Amino acid sequence: MKPYADSNFFSRIYIETEWTDEASNLVAGFLSEGVRLPVLWLHAVEVRNAIELFVFAGKKSGERIVTSEAAALAQARFRMDCRRNSGPYKQTTMDLGAWEATAEELTLRHSAKRGFRTYDLLHVSAAIELSCDTFYSYDKKCNALAALEGLKTPLG
Image 1: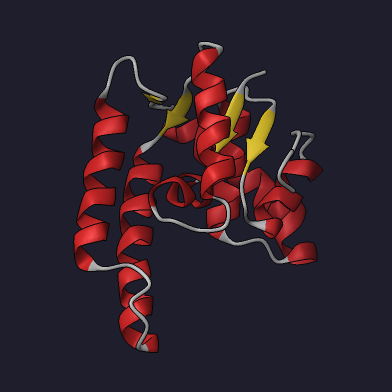
Image 2: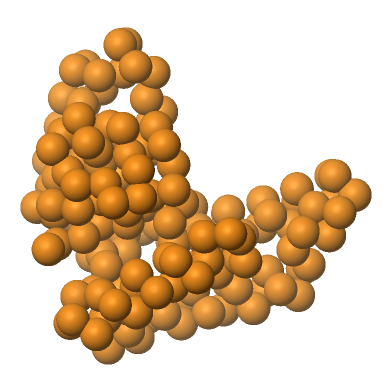
């Protein structure tokens, strides 16, 4: 198995949600098998922003879903996990031209019919370009696109 996880999956590890235990256990299982999830610059940007959006959502709703202090700890943990050479993730780069071409192909084939977002297209095209066979996300639309492209979607 060669797994790929989108930013939605990663953010659930660092901010406590109903999926945190499941996502953390999956990553621990991958690591015990010597499998490290690829992390792209896209993940770094999106996960950091997702953590801060949890703080914002709490302020806006009047509920303290995630405190600024908890977000700072989550940010530090994510950054540390991404940088560890023997950690659960592997910093990964890709040929941007090939990535863009695959995303464009997916856009032309699927978006007008099913309304996929850029986020969905970028992550699924990254999984394809990295020759991954399994796609992990807690986003139903993203899983739908991954499945259309022949990727296994155990969480979808």
